[in-house]
Amino acid sequence: MHLVVLGGTGFLSGAVVDAALDRGHTVTAVTRGTRPMLATADDGALRHVVGDRDDAGSLGEALAPVLARRVDAVVDCCGYTVAGARAAAEVLADVPRYVYVSSISAYRDWPPGPVPDESAPTFGADADLDEYGPMKAESERVLAATFGDAALAVRAGLIVGPGDRTKRLTWWLDRIAREERVVVPAEGLDQPVAVVDARDLGGWLVDAAAADWSGAVNATGDAGMTTFGALVEACRVAVAADGGRAADLVAVPQADLLAAGAQPWRDLPLWMPSDVAATAWQVGTSRARRLGLPSRPVEETVRDTWRWLSDAGLEHPGLPEAVRAETHGR
Ligand SMILES: NC(=O)c1ccc[n+]([C@@H]2O[C@H](COP(=O)([O-])OP(=O)(O)OC[C@H]3O[C@@H](n4cnc5c(N)ncnc54)[C@H](OP(=O)(O)O)[C@@H]3O)[C@@H](O)[C@H]2O)c1
Image 1 (cartoon, rainbow, N blue to C red):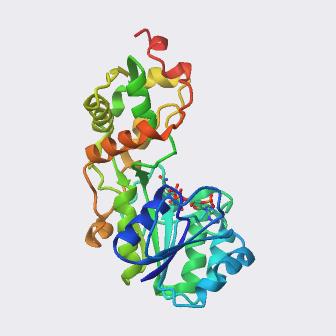
Image 2: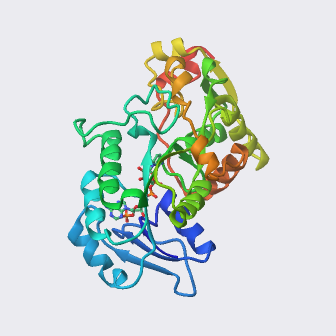
């Protein structure tokens, strides 16, 4: 296949390019050129063109020489505006297959959810389309209007793995490696958490580009694949396995954290208060499982992310007072 990847030098998009090349496909990646292409191909199987996918003129110009020959599918990894969806629909309308990376944020009632399956309502066109979730929902509609059954909207959950610069999972690894004691929300430890490794998702997006699946599909780990506590423990194991000293965990009741002004998710990444978490991590993934989306053990993802982080030079912000062990008398 000849794939056009919108993106290609980022986290998920880099994994898509790697997977496509591994599977023997030819890739044209489109980015604005702000970061280098990490993938390489000696045999000319990879081409990197510079253009802004949010602008039809720029995208069309970047892809003009490419569209002169056959393109089998698009994998769209950088949909951040509705204008970008319209631009792609205009320029790439003749491509026979379009896989759009959407998000579970497209669901109107998530969080707190739950999202039993893909038939749950998404945001309507009357929502604020500058907001991330409504923008994803509208972009899905724009692309479906052009590509019909040839479009697949992949509603990704929390993507993790090596290369992740969003400072969520790496925040825990960084803290556990640096601090003596790390605060965790006591009620959070048993909460089920679901994530998807960028490498699992990236490879499967390439499979999706070759398949004829249409509509929408939730793409994350199974509800209950792990727990918040197991994820944090996997971070401790990964740090210790490399000879580091893993921080002791200090379980603080969430009422105390909230009273101290801690902001869920922002101050302790992946932490949602119990009333939200009980349903927010419950996203039905039966369709993805039927379609073969893999889900590697979370311990493997954490270990590989730690190895990547050790060389990545990713700076994490200072710890807010509200989530320091000392603040809670520990
Ligand atoms: N991270 C998550 O947990 C998560 C969860 C759900 C859904 N998603 C979705 O997953 C997708 C990938 O997310 P990611 O964080 O992994 O991103 P990513 O792959 O790092 O995407 C960024 C890539 O797209 C390029 N890009 C960005 N804006 C562009 C533009 N206007 N024109 C051309 N190229 C552009 C970037 O290069 P340049 O900057 O050089 O242009 C880079 O190569 C996104 O659609 C996101 O909404 C992510």
